Figure 1 (spheres, rainbow, N blue to C red):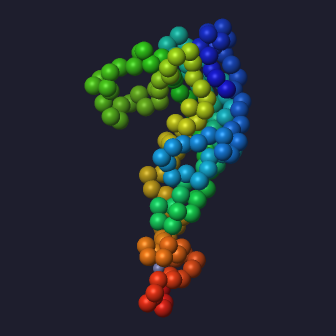
Figure 2 (tube, helix red, strand yellow):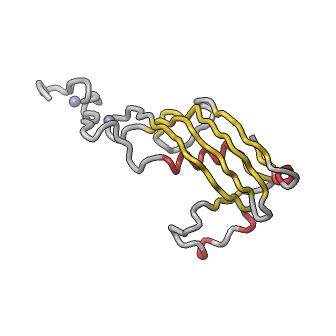
Figure 3 (cartoon, rainbow, N blue to C red):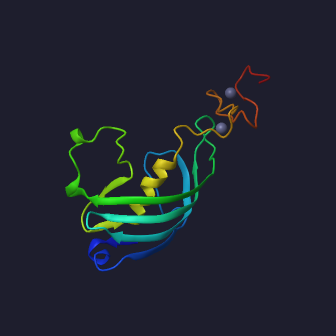
Length: 160
Ligand SMILES: [Zn+2]
Ligand SMILES: [Zn+2]
């Protein structure tokens, strides 16, 4: 779904969209899959930007940092975001990291693609480091055995 500014200027739009598993992908992120994700809410033009108030629910599965098994995470969050036109974006020097305006984002062109919004929200929801459990034993660097459920097969290793 694409939220066009020229439509929102006329009237607010109800949003309801489900992204099936596999429909949304992210490059360079250790994710097994995203979705299905369900986004429901409304969007309106405020004069300064697109305000989007919606509920996002569904599942993502980042990979365990040690054993590379997918670890499903439930997303269930209320969003209240203001997307301003990119032309209004302050230069980088004016935006200190950790600025209080974290809920303000930017869009380019004629409007906002909800798939882009979902990608951003998934990135925000990802833990810094995913572990399937605190005592995950990971993969053997020699034989790649998943040491959580199988014994190392390296020559000379009789017991783990
Ligand atoms: Zn693990
Ligand atoms: Zn091994």
